[in-house]
Length: 204
Length: 217
Image (cartoon, rainbow over the protein chains, first blue to last red):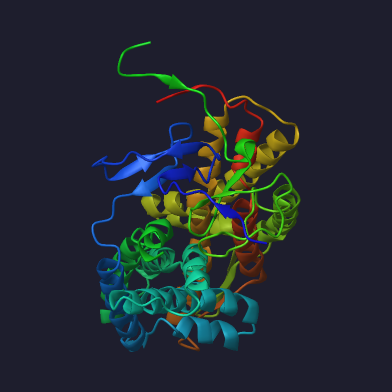
């Protein structure tokens, strides 16, 4: 069954308190908030398609760099060693902690990869005026995967672990640590640039 | 009433037999029994409220409270260095940082791993009870508590990542070895389950008990 559309594109129902409101036509504000609960109803994005696409491609490059270069270099009583982003997951698995290894794999590899590839999948065809197959599902998925992509928290974990070991060993940040820092910034910028409602207003 | 402000009668979408699509935002007309109705624009299924929000949210919350006990009692890692062996729990990990004089990091770990999970479980319990008992007081403050749990919950995962990085860094065999403990698995479970509980909770239920009063515009 299909519902009857309401032909007022400026009418919104707040998704946190359900209050019906009409969006101001020319507001010139960065964001419009719900008058009752303060939830953000509308973002004034400058560029709806090119900016998220650019951030997605940048994130892809940084993600590859973060996974191919050493994350930390470590020396302890003459012995040197370096570690990669994926090494911890492999080591956890080898120690007989497969559940923990999968949680870390999902939150630091699979979810960010999904986030980045969905961004490119959605916005690259849109740039050429086409709507990709499964557009609704992809938009849904990109919002759904966001809270599970935890690279910024992983980076804090790297910092805490480094400080914990600082007394016993010399630890130097590798190239992947720097690119991971940039990746975190790019991904959080990308997270604020996806506006399904605005896209629909334009695409439909 | 000043000239620049005027009050208008406020309506919720549900009270007007309308429903905002959760995918594309289009406001659709919806009959009183609104089931299996699809959005006119993007064809997503429409829901006035998240289906079975309260019972599912409770289920995740109760499961997370049960895992919270072993998560704090069992060690999250075992450290062996130069023949000496030590086990760390969540609490002793934070204590170790404090004793070593790294109090800013000890504070971060204490807040993220101990305060936040506790606060989250208490807030979710309070929100679910308040919705079930149809409380109408302070809806805005309760909405802010909900936003807090949504925003801050993920950061508790930091201890799991600390263990992962330590395990990766310290595998010099005879010199030192770090092994993940069972507590870390339970702790990751607590974080994931409380995140799921917060995500299945529908904040509009808070406002359903509030009469759609006049709103200043």
